[in-house]
Image 1: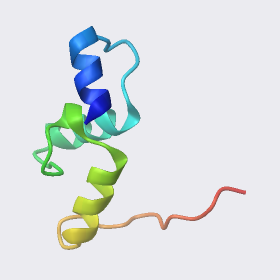
Image 2 (image 1 turned 120 degrees about the vertical axis):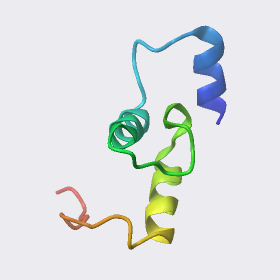
Image 3 (image 1 turned 180 degrees about the vertical axis):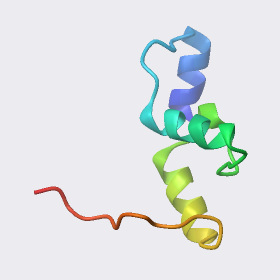
Image 4 (image 1 turned 90 degrees about the vertical axis):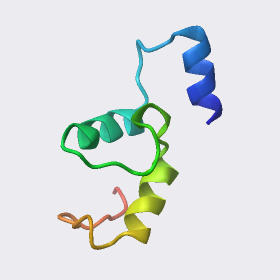
Length: 66
């Protein structure tokens, strides 16, 4: 949450954090990760999806980059 507070205080939205973009995109279709889209972190998204496997479907398995 530190980055969220810092960016709100400085009004720095010129360079959005990737997880925020993902959370905002999902919010547009009525999905969320139990956090405000502007406060979402990769861990929030990962934890929510793993705790609610019936809500999301993996369409491409994760693998290490070469």
